[in-house]
Image (cartoon, rainbow, N blue to C red; front, side, top):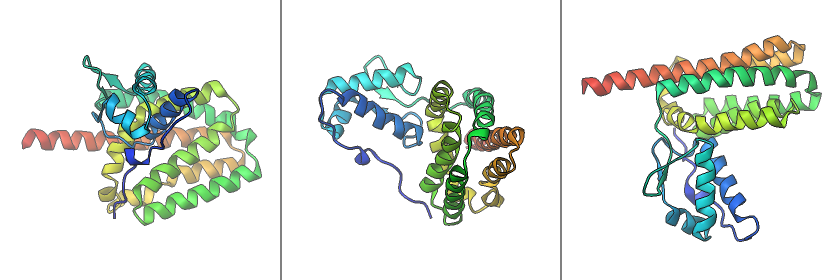
Length: 241
């Protein structure tokens, strides 16, 4: 079972001229971070303007802003597109995520309340149920919700901004993995997709902040290694074709 992907049809019209650029930017940014668009997906200003029901200028500004954050590339003709995925970039982004997110999780740990723990338990249950039912988009959303609930508890806007940018640049890889999740959930990988989240939650309950950071880092490494394995296998298959 493979549920439907986020599409540009989910964008909401924007009309307030004062905030139109920010609203377009925020919706595109959230979609990119969620893995809504596959690598090398192209966007034209005209098509997005029609979708958002606004003029070209705020769309152009939003695309330029996203390009400045390395979430999009812009061709000489002005078309914006999602960057291609590469093993080298994946390793680089993952290394940065391990450093920043592991440290942020450890900072967040002492700030976690019983209410936070209850919220994380609910998210983890939903993540596990989504994996069991092969609801890929819900799995992706639950994964993001779990991580960011912890990171926000660190109380650091600077660290949170850095993490958001890393996730923004990870969007094409999230989509790449999600597109293959249906097949992966029929393998031995199915049982392990929530293991590190369970370890993170257990560390929070035990007040073991070093373990919390280590489990967070292990979660990122596990996803990285799985993606690298799939990329290498698909490259070999393409060469043999």
